[in-house]
Length: 194
Image 1 (cartoon, rainbow, N blue to C red):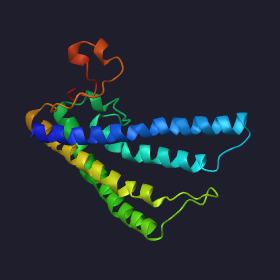
Image 2: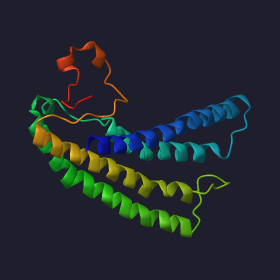
Image 3: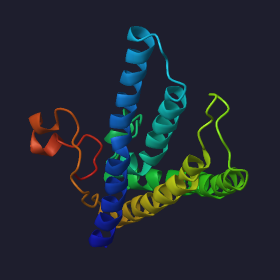
């Protein structure tokens, strides 16, 4: 089972790292636009559309990576004090009642949203050139798919933690700031295994 969880984690991490390159392109586009606008006094017609498309794509496609690496913000002031089985039970209920229905709805509605966009060859109305948007609307159901896949892994982790009383290991891609400064028994404040 651990190999299956790592396989899903690796997919989520790979997708997140692939789309993280969008921030490099976004930075280049914004820098170029600032230079052209304020130094050359010749603003571009395409930079605005390009920047929100890149940022939106990065934001939506990084969700599964954030879930796999536990990077989502959580209010764990009380949660971290719970025993592992209580944490797993709470997480399992939340994944089943809120998370999975939401990402399945995202995938379903996003598919129809993207399909409509492709059928009309939707273009942006914010700039004169109007770059095509339908390619990027396809990212909505795709991100829902990756979130669903990672959600299945998280549900399996909860079930394993309920059964064994300890969190299954995770792929060690990201560590909390200062985690290496803490004693080994306190290194993971959420109770999840590193």
